[in-house]
Image (cartoon, rainbow, N blue to C red):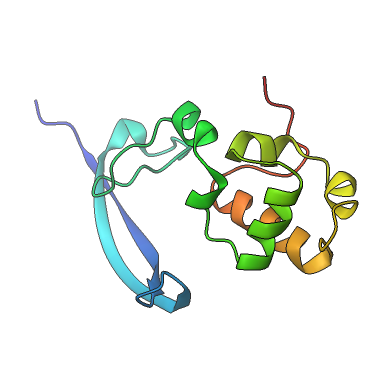
Length: 127
């Protein structure tokens, strides 16, 4: 016996980037996805891109802050504060970054924005 199916219309937003990786706009696309009817009321709790390699979070946290899309000024501030890994940056309290020479609201916002792109935040309690 065939199971009934449920169709959902999904609108996808992709970020358009220039050759330097800077976001310059968005591209929208509509598609229809078919689910078994028993999943109709299920909640979407996460979406994983099939075309991008899966990144192990512990490997990412141990990676250099150079892997983040930060300005020269922000990188200089992090080097001055001796912050070398993404985990060290995420653990850093915002008020502690303000104490570093050259750090200001712009650098703080830039670091916070870049961490947020990866699901992290400043002052995050990491083991």
